[in-house]
Structure formats: C-alpha cells, structure tokens
Length: 254
Ligand code: OOG
Ligand code: MG
Picture (cartoon, rainbow, N blue to C red):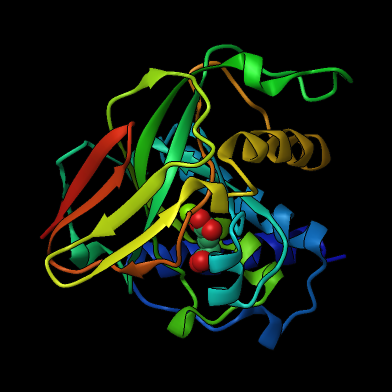
C-alpha cells in the first residue's frame, strides 16, 4: 500500500498534467501500485478538482467492450467520475488546445432518477434509472502516448476528459442498437450489444463496482456505460455519435 503522502503526490502529478496540458510517464515506472492504491489516487485527484469548485455529475465505466479492451490491452472493467467541468452541450464546442491527445468514443448514457444504495442486497439498479440517451465521451490519457497499466488508468480517473449527451428518452431496452461514430474523415460502426452484451448489464456491473469501490450513486447522476467500439482521434470539426432509434449527439472541436 502507498502511504497517504505518496497517494497525494501522484494525484498532484496527474492533476498538473491535465491542467498544464502536458503528458506524464506511467506511475508504474517509479511506483508499485495496487488496484486499491490506484482508486485512492483517483479519489485524491477528484478531491483536488472538487476543492477547485467542480461538481461531480456522474460516473463512467471503461473497458466494458472487447473492442476497447483489445485497443488498450486491458481486460477488466474500470470506473471513474464525471464532473461539470467535463460537460459539453450537445452541438457545443470542445477546445483542442486544452487537451493533450484526445480521442472520442460512442457511448450510451443513463440517468439515475433516485439515489442507489449499493449496500442493499437486492437492489435492482435498472429500477433507479429513468432515461437513456446517445453520448460521446472524450478521453485524454494524461500518460505519454496513451500507454498505461491497469492501475495507471484507474489512477488517472479512467482518462475522463469530456462528455456530451443527446436528448434523453424514457428508459427502454437498448441491447442491440447500431452505433455510428463519425467525423469528416473517419467512421466507425458497431452495436450496443458489444457493451457487456447490452448496456443494461453495464448498469449491473456498475452496482458491483460501486459496492466494492464505495462510489456514491445519486439521483440525477449520469452514467456512461462504456464505448461500443474502439476510440478514434478527436480532430478539428464536427464529430457525431448516432445510435439507431435513440438519436444523435455532436460536438465541434475547435
Ligand atoms: C480508458 C477509458 C476507457 C471506455 O469507454 O472503455 C473508456 C482509455 O481507453 O483511455 O472510457
Ligand atoms: Mg468511455
């Protein structure tokens, strides 16, 4: 286990990398982190952000699809936090100069209608969700060349950097919808079935993670279920995620 001072020092290093828009080396180059240490660094990093006035707006899951696991060489689900500073309006602008080497992912978002008590043994988290929407996630690893260990990426708040949500619809089964992520140069297509055989399973996986990692789940929180396809670079211009039957969401990078 890392001592509290080292946890805070590593959180400070990741926080400085994000605010100064400069990459940093893998923590594993100099420190031996357990997965518990990694979540402690993530919590310390979020404490720094909330101390500056940011508000937690939800949670995100990572590596819920095989495409993402294969792309990054990681095979276990991770959880991170979203804040209001990461939120981009549908159709809104993203400033590329504030990001190191951003990528974008097509996602599905859920909205919690009530607080979830992860400790209650028979919680059905799907009954706590009232809405679903197409979403874009912007990831921007603070590590050089997006190269990281499993512990590194957890410590770095799972590469979270931004998110945009399309129009909400009442919750329904979104288990096998076609997903299309595109910009002027590129297009990637997939299906929501790639997200743990259906994004509702991501909610169940989240409940399990929330139990194990003491992540609060509150009414109004947004939940990003994880990318359905591999990420693609976020480049200047318009990027769109379209989920068949759910709608679309766009951001414009400037
Ligand atoms: C980590 C974040 C993964 C997802 O949707 O799978 C993620 C990364 O790939 O840098 O957000
Ligand atoms: Mg993601």
